[in-house]
Image (tube, rainbow, N blue to C red; front, side, top):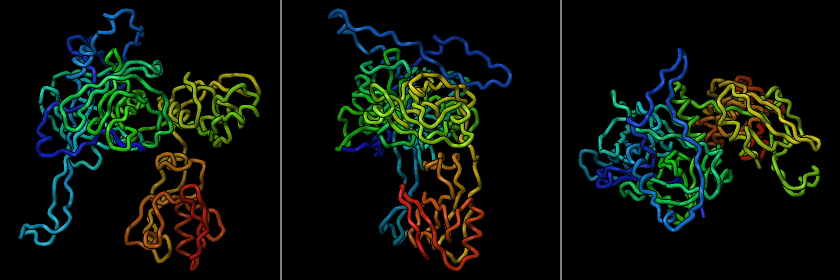
Length: 485
């Protein structure tokens, strides 16, 4: 079995003409909305709607069992869009066109995905893998109107992208964000999208699991799992609750055949909201707060050694100097039980809960220390280190043609590397350069040359240029080797 992206569909010329593809979203009629509140001076004008809490009740008679999801599905339609991403790629092989001779002719590829309108002035969220590499984007509404779309922000690390269309003075129907902290396993949900190029399709199911951190399709995995059928073509579609609010954006399926096995995954609405807020506030990247703690899941054996009656929480094993966690008062040996009121069981859960907080927010951490529970307060803030400039190494040495960046918590987090590491890492490689031909790869960490620690990219550049022979310590995928040249 394997995890695959849910629903990116390559469009044939016929499929490309079909209107009405998209992921689900609740359509709150503009007539039913309150007049938009005008922001105070300097206040970001987001207009992102928070849904009312969901009221749960089991059926009590046969009539209730026979109730229909039709009202939720009908309301969802107007806020659902199709996203068409067009790419021009160089053809391969020999063209039969005598003008092009033996050169491959360029061809246009078009993929289909779904999107959800989250702001009435034309802000739409979809999956990053739907729009990645696109030269042009088009959005088709449920009423078949077409709009050119602008990409505001693409976040590959969580597989989300934010688009903007211009509806003029019209206020579009939108989808409210559900609070997934209130979601429970067993809640009814609908998945809405366009599987296999069919027009808008609604499937029903339940929330099968929450906080899935072992699904390795993004760097901030904390997925909602559902058994509502999700297939290829559902990318960017919506998972909605019985209030019609956005629980999550469908992004992946667990499948060997590529079809639905009743195990689908959605990005929770809290992460979706953070990405949208970053986009509409003018940012080109998402600032994700960082706790600065290395953590270990509490196993049964570890729980016994800590005097716990059962495995719970995550153990703090290391703290980055002057990080948010250290300043909050965390210590090595503390067990974090919850972050911002949400229970945590592994490092991925802590990382996600902290990363979804707005910068500057005070975040409560419930911890266990020496057998006593206490609450600390951490301030959500970006990892330290800023964004040091990339440095291209030139010259006749083993790293010629490599572009390197100094490792800091900020650069490491942005690149999916260990933020506790020191040295530099290779960001890109010139395929014709010496480093690429030798076998270096992007992501390789270099922390020592000729027995001396590497502090930053400038120092590495100088050491490589001045030496005639080199012993380079390289770490790749957790394995470290010293290579002589």
